[in-house]
Length: 225
Image 1 (cartoon, rainbow, N blue to C red):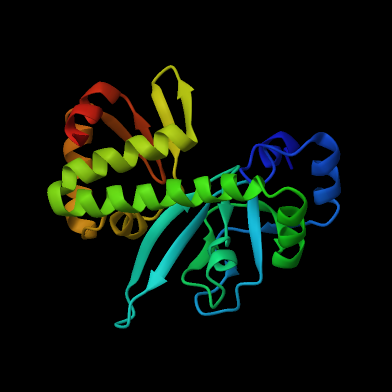
Image 2 (cartoon, one colour):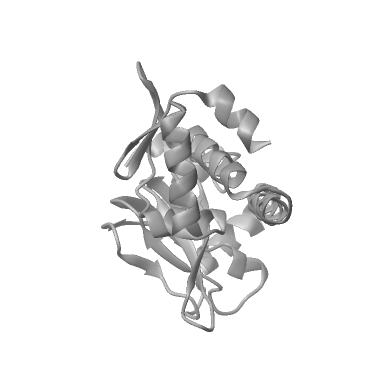
């Protein structure tokens, strides 16, 4: 596990080296394969996790059995911290999208950190605020943007967080199925596939299974507005 990535998480970033080592001694390291659940919606929320590597999707199950994809999280991000501020059952299911390494910290251990370093709570709140801002943006997009615009914005966001620069463009291994990508933008698979095909025909992207190469970022950015 890349310790620098873990160290960059909001929970740890402001700790001194000595404090960080003391905290890490109270954590456990876990590895999940693609498709494995990290926690399930409705289960007890008694710990949080920091992603060291990989990707995790957060999904919510509707009463009619349909899944709604809430967010994709990557290295350095935190999941499971909501129940610290609102104790209760998990509000989403977290599932590994690829081989994922996590650092696990019990809420009791976290409370001890906050007692010793109360300023850490400010950084956790900032992490929550960022996720809330993403949620608000997503709601606004559902109201004001068409499907191609939402697809463009989702591809750019995934590229910013998971992309790798290549000679052919920004290569993004998103590890999402077509259905999951559709859930992410709040549209049907058919309409999302139509938008992707249009972008591909225009030469803006190249589709390669669960990987997409963003060739013309300027055009995608303009379409996302």
